[in-house]
Length: 379
Image 1 (cartoon, rainbow, N blue to C red):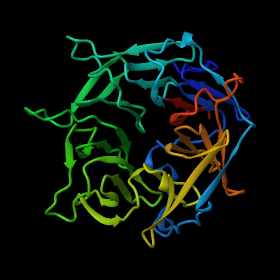
Image 2 (cartoon, one colour):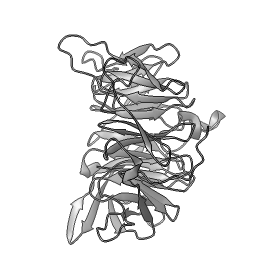
Image 3 (cartoon, rainbow, N blue to C red):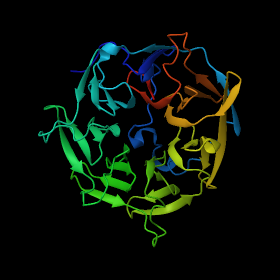
């Protein structure tokens, strides 16, 4: 059955109003927008238009002004949601409308009123293989995938059990390989980001292939710590790793372009206007834009002033809505909105005396559901 109940907020999230918001150790607003974690071809041009896209002009100054926003109200999810833990790092939605929430102590399926918790059960081979949920992803067919420490798990809805795909057979002395992020390309192949390299998994066969740095091969990926992978609007495949940002040929398994960066890239996204955004680990390049013709990254520093103290902002997540608005999660400055028209950033933050303000200033993830609600997940 499709879930058509009016959604209530989850603990750790906020629901937003003026586009209508909701909050969990997570939050949501209604805008009809699309989350970044979508199937790759959803925004791709057709025919000869692909490959002829020019990078759009960077819409922001090098030093970005942050102002406080007051036009959005938040509603927090109640404790009755029954989450296994209030720190929610991942939120996705399946084809039935359920919201799945990943925590460090179990996987939660939220139906708008309460949660059902899934964890590893010793002695049950078809239970979830982990307790700490590293990543979540719903593919184009609606299948829920869960990144664990030693395997990739697939949820079987008919039996409410889990199938396990070992991506790296354990050998004596080797540490586990947590799957930190899952994405899908236009061909339906899953790509897994880990600290031990990039893994490709074919869901049809279960076959996995590992791509790792080889010091003797300049065409191998530059670093084994993979932060983010995905296609741009032309179908080119990019890998952000500990060695830089690289264009990767999936047919040959080799790097075809390397972009030198001032700091490590944690995430990237090409928006509907053709701006290729990067999110960096360092505050000196917290937000950047890549010109793919020149291979130059323009870095933006973001400073937030509050209570007379100015501090650099570290970006923790990125989301684009269907109207092209870019939203950023931050550690300390709350939820940020990129205001292209005025070339600035608007901050929505916690105000202890206001119960309809954002629940926390440390936002670790931003997600949008199919009804247009934006969920912000908190530290």
